[in-house]
Length: 429
Image (cartoon, rainbow, N blue to C red):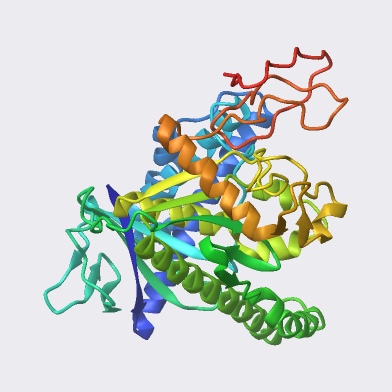
């Protein structure tokens, strides 16, 4: 299993100059490769291969006065820039053909110097981690690294990143054993929880335990608006505009880092305290297209679920995703009747009474149903539920009998012909 370990690095002034030269060279080669393939597409010619681009944009370009400075940096980072452009085009083509999971990708775009910059060194480039803890990079030098933890094995590659705020990081790719992060199994049979995500409270766990929504973006939104107004008033190309841009980037960076750190802590706590975790397979991109888009992005449900699944898998915990169409909110956790709030108006209902007389808190009831459905799936040996995924999402409107892109987290598409309704109790495969 391959993992990334990221550390802050502190280059000296001459090393920052060398890094700026390396970042610029890699960016130019990447942009030249994108431009060459765009030109071939406009002229109706076949796309030039990576070998042809390597010869034209690196080997021959070094002999020209306009690109002679490419010889001042390591050839490995230039080859990696070409590989990145080729990988971006491959991902684009597989995406438009429907062979790549997730949302459809667009074609590669040109890189800008004001965005994050990166260069990558592989083992062939002969980078080294020295005995004194410094990172030696070819044609750059020995950089001081803030080692927050030791590397578990020798790295296969290192990527040096410069953020828009001017900070430098080294990201190492290392191979670790599959069981390196396994935790001891918890003996308590009740050490499991459903997780009901929301905006009012970030998550509701078993027993009514609540994780409050920190709202990192909301707390710094006024500060961000002020910094953006100052940036908008600066003349383009001026030194003051560059300073104002960095102030805006620092606010964004603080939001990003505090959110990421908070999510990592919550994930570690949940995995350490529970043997099994049951969550809903939320359509986060769909939710982000609604009226609460800003709050959905601020909560970062997608980041939380991805990290929770990864951490649970490496720790040997049970992690189950319940289908997004499972009516966890509407079902009564006592009698099982679907009598709860539904629709847009139902979002305002925080508690409701079932016909059986039971009074439910909306989120706690959903957590119980998610946990119960997840345990049923584990007992049947299934990774995801098929409940309601083959039914019409909206009554009276035709749907398709199942997800046409199963396993790719896409909602069922509509078809013009009505489909026969499945018999009750029979899953649609």
